[in-house]
Length: 106
Image (cartoon, rainbow, N blue to C red; front, side, top):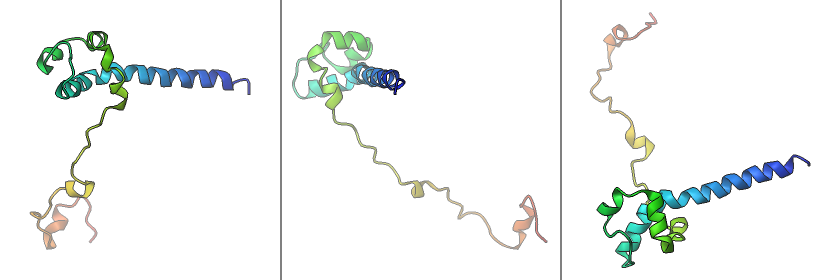
């Protein structure tokens, strides 16, 4: 039971670091979404924000910080794993396959 305190402190520190790191990681997308919604963002335009430091963007646009934790995530719409299998229909399967095999059971 004496070791529970330091473990909880480390877990709490990791969670706090995770939430604090989410703000600068998401700030560019948050500002783009806010600008599209009509909010005032400094500097204007995604191209102008591209070269600016993430921490500078956080300091200049502090009113949009809460949105970085609740922003809508993009959903990946890709192929299912079964759709990504290689196509081997061009291979010949027949009597001479054993010549290409590493081991031949004869």
